Structure formats: structure tokens, C-alpha cells
Image (cartoon, rainbow, N blue to C red; front, side, top):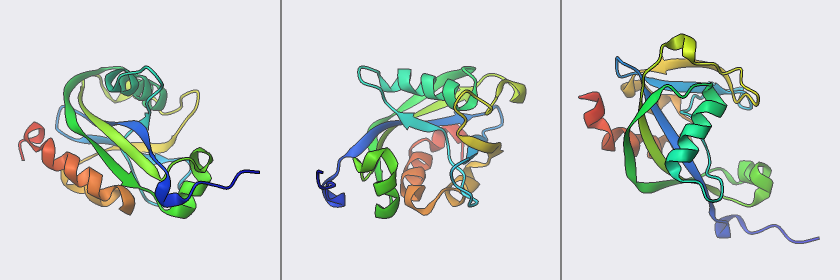
Amino acid sequence: MSQPIDYHCRPFRPCVGIMLINSVNQIFVGQRLDNHGDAWQMPQGGIDHGETPLEAGLREMHEEIGTNKAQLLREHPEWLSYSIPEGLANQLWGGKYRGQTQKWLAFRFTGDNADINIDTQHPEFRQWRWSSVTSLHQLAVPFKRQVYGKIIEDFRDIFEI
């Protein structure tokens, strides 16, 4: 049996993050099914081999929240990374990664609330809501807050803050 890779030597999982913004500049957040705390997050997911971040973002949006009613506003120029706690990292993705490196996409939601359906084939969220940009940072789990802060800062002109 092979030894697990040391936590600090593990790579980051390539991922896409989705900031879905409604017509009044609120952001979609969901409460994960596998986390019973009060943490909320924006949709995100892995980038499949050969897939662009935009393709992954559109796929993940459909898989996680059941909609494709969105228009791309911006792709963040950098990959933003975060580590997850070691105990959690050992449970996720077969212990192969220490966290995620994400390409963030900002989308304008062009539908209405009835177009969002979190009861998908492989549901990830227990419930969802629209959040103000000022509340977003506080809603996230602590290990995602630095990345969320960077996204909010870099996309701030979208919200006219």
C-alpha cells in the first residue's frame, strides 16, 4: 500500500469559481449539503481535462444550480488558491490535493428566481439565497475568505461600490 502524499507537497486542484450577480447586484450563494454549519459559498467545481475555465463555469452552473441564464461579465486574470484544513484535505479527492486553485468568472444572471433549481441530478446545495457583496465575505468558511476578499476587491467596479 502506498504512503499518502505529505499535505504540504500536494498540488492544488484546478477549479472554476462562479460569481453569479443578479439585476440588483446581489450574489448567488448556496449552503452545501455536506456542511451542516452556517457557511455559504458561490458555485465552484473542477475543470475537466481539455475544458476551458469558461466551459467549466457554464457546465458547473448548470450542474449545481440548474440554469444557464447568464452572461459573462469578466474572467479574473489570475488563478487564486486556498488551502483547506489538512483533516478535510485527507477526506476529499482521495487525499490528492491540499486545496484548490481557481479561475473566477463573474456572470450577470439574466433569468428570474424560478430559473434556479438546486434540486439537480447531483445536488450540492441544501438551500440558496442572494447575498449583498458586503455580506459575502462573512458568509464563507474561514479558509475561503481571503480568496473571496480578493474577488470582491477585483470585481468591485461591477457592483459600483
